[in-house]
Amino acid sequence: MLITCDEKPFLIISHLAEIEFQKWCILSLVLLRSFPSYS
Image (tube, rainbow, N blue to C red; front, side):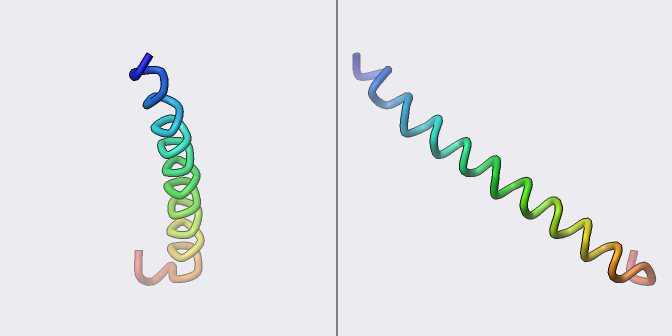
């Protein structure tokens, strides 16, 4: 039972981390396109 209780918050945290990672990926791609001379 403890495993299933601890599983839920971990899944929520990992899902939020995935969203943050996607945001940073998109942001870095936009920045690289804004500065073509830098890449």
